[in-house]
Length: 444
Image (tube, rainbow, N blue to C red; front, side):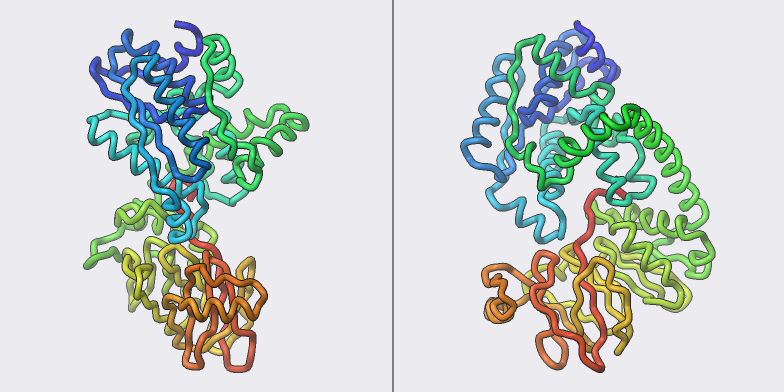
């Protein structure tokens, strides 16, 4: 056992002999090094090892099939049972559009769903993910740039639920050195060099610059993550202690007066806690959207559709309930009767201004003007063709959502972007369209 394998053994921890593990292997350097090290440790530690490779249907077939073939070939050499699971072409992109999230996040949802299913079938104790110290740092920087709260800035844990990360104390340089020593080849995903993805820009552009200008930044970010983990744990515990949700029909409730008496950060954590208790989709609103709603209470909007949950004040109570799961299906309609924040199945958020008021701050969203009541419904192809041609950006084949008031079509929204919007005029209210929810609970 060399030093790399010893570090993987320590990262894996001690388990009873006969424990079943699934190694999630993409074919890249990190996961290939993990698989090789685990295969070497298997007999000594007495565990049973399986490999699962997920093909996401996002890349050129020849490249994707080559990666799957390389993983199968390596598993054959190491005598590890291997299963390749393919996602239908276009499904990931479709999920990203429907949920209002990035393609990377949608791919991760599919991958984790597949890994959980395989773990149930194989009765695996843990799914092993090859995240390294470099991944931890990349993720921390991404979340800083997105303005995540303490939970998002907390250090990536070695173990959480079904997931175990045995390489978290190892860096990419150590991974490559191990593969070179063992003369093991690995695949290079062509998308890893595509700087349209934020993670790639951070890894290829930002981190080398920081290494050059601030050599000790890595230790600082790791220390920040450890501190934020403590802060996140304290805030979650304190919110649960101070603000107790009670079951109320199909949702949760508490006295609004008690909720509003607490500091804003405790209110935010209580709402995140409600999402956990309701066991809704693995999604929460962006903290900024939640903060904007809470900061306006009690005099602002009294209800907000925050992605997976809806929060509203009725009478003397604050209610949290799952959002309508049917409103994103074919034939849906969502009626907006007055001011507030509304999220349509994670596709996008509508901030509705006061009746006849056009002074609401726009921020980074797109604006259209309409009157109440306003109905959101599936857009028709003829509407998309006509309105987007008029604006010089034809989107006739794109699925879209129409916003309609008593005077007719007020807006068309596709993939979280405003394709057409009615312009300002007397008597109209201001509506702001912004992107969908963030599905990563850990970023809150």
